[in-house]
Length: 166
Image 1 (tube, helix red, strand yellow):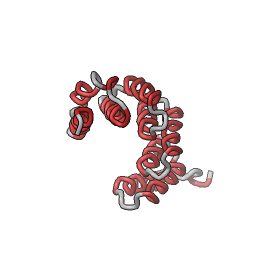
Image 2 (cartoon, one colour; image 1 turned 90 degrees about the horizontal axis):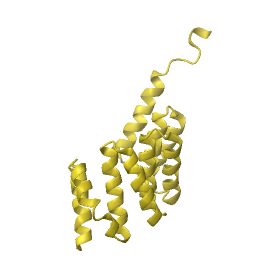
Image 3 (cartoon, helix red, strand yellow; image 1 turned 90 degrees about the vertical axis):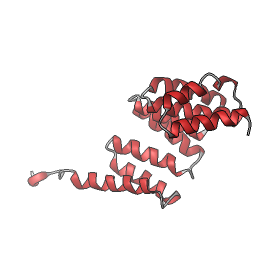
């Protein structure tokens, strides 16, 4: 394993432990010198860490810069979409996640992210369709079933459109 591989794995471990600031401190200084998949993976981790720390503008800047080097990265498009969505740029966030889906339509997580975004925007029918696409690709993923269940509870709690027949 190369030093670059070790750095990326260390960043991943720190993120898994919820130590996002430490992950950024480890990854960001060395990010410009990384190449290929190590750069892409480190950038995805750093964007994730920024998002978890609610530093959404920094996440957007980093993801945009990384996409200049890796324009075909579905994970970077999805990461940018999450950062934009969390910055209240809902349309642009959905657009980036849909780019990720177009680049890698078989990856269930991208459909799940789209479904979560749509559910947040109260677009329940579209959210249900997206989570069903996620389940087609990964039928045993519990969180997909949970989102579908949440969606059903939301529908059940909606007041009638015309209460009392008025």
